[in-house]
Image (tube, rainbow, N blue to C red; front, side, top):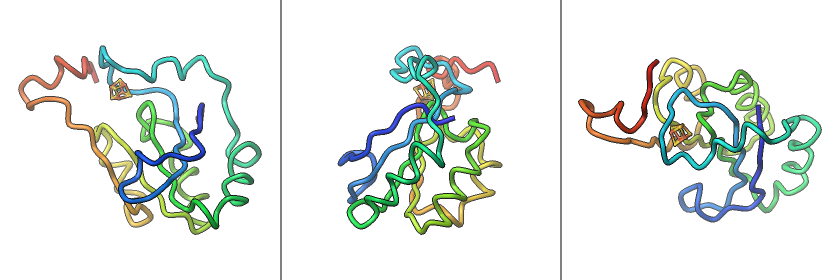
Length: 132
Ligand code: SF4
């Protein structure tokens, strides 16, 4: 579920201005997470609230980042990627890397993957506090 949008970002997509979509929910529970408030936000509809505006601005911004939360655990992740791809956007994701099986399903449609490495492997759960 998409919960927030930054329509114009200069920092989320390397070398490109982009629009950033934030999905809610994450399988990690990092203490410093700044996106937990997304859960309280109203859900935005891709077809009604987002895609028309993306298409209207496509000549200026055609790179889209999907962030979160953790975008790969969002139940509409594949649908979002497919709809953006059908409309010829360049697509990037920011991920904690926990769901390579999901990423593999769409990797040919992705232009960029940013992965947040949180700690050395032995101490990973001290930061992620992941029980999954
Ligand atoms: S992986 Fe990212 S979104 Fe998930 S809890 Fe950690 S900081 Fe928050």
